[in-house]
Image 1 (cartoon, rainbow, N blue to C red):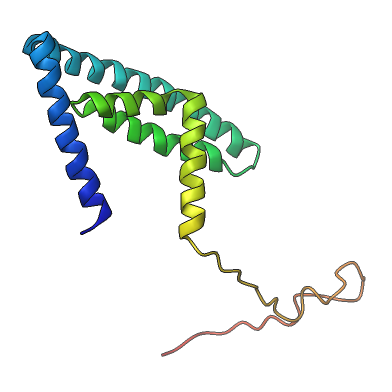
Image 2 (tube, rainbow, N blue to C red):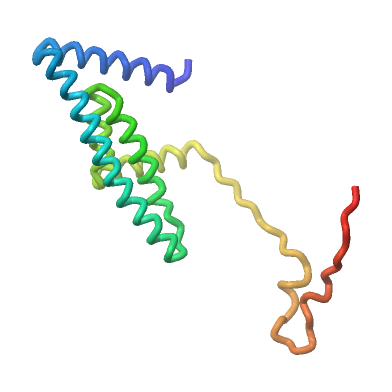
Length: 155
């Protein structure tokens, strides 16, 4: 059985148990109201954090830098928004902790370590075509474009 299937079933059963226990202690009206309130508050907070992260991504790209950390934050914010919209107490706790920048960095580091342990990185070496890298373009009598041949491809 896949680990995701087991995780989803366990999460669903835990959420169902918590909803039944909380509704027994505080009433169904409180439980339903809490679910609606956390869904609305969570989606608003996720939208605000998403805007802040998007501005950070645009700033990094304007500086011609790769926004790797910001992209990971954006993915985590989307996940937290989905968790906050999902009714349940455990998903709300996880979703809100992902929205907090300090704990989000902990999630990001943990996921990064997990990916690095699972993904094998291969290094590729590009073989540079003969001509451009071996020709001194600053020399006045050398034309690096003289080796280019125009043609037409027919099948």
